[in-house]
Image (cartoon, rainbow, N blue to C red; front, side, top):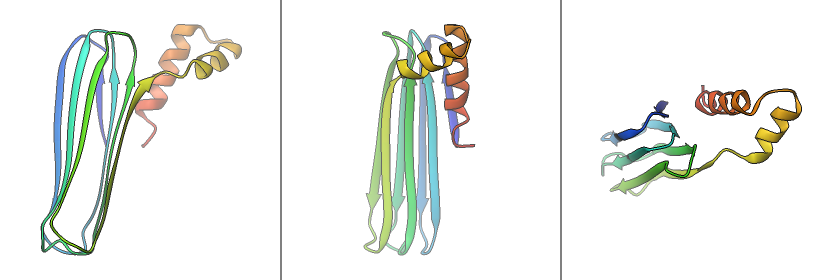
Length: 128
């Protein structure tokens, strides 16, 4: 699992590749991104399965949480499969904090700032 904490303005980039060159291998790549105001993040993930990589299983997950109008994220999942007996897939999603989550935490007595920080911490640690 990888985390990009881009709450500070700037440019961030991550390229991650999983290569399967032999048979019966497994993998899972998970990248979580938090994108703040003025931050621009690009994540490119790739699973490559060679012809000899038969019976391979792999999954690529790219997810981003955007924290403002000027937060920019580009998620680029890619599969390159040269074998014919594999299970490989990917998912990519991005979006803002759910307002209902904020409202719920505020109803429990948290300030909006603390509620946001709790949601972000949960987001970052969701796959651990």
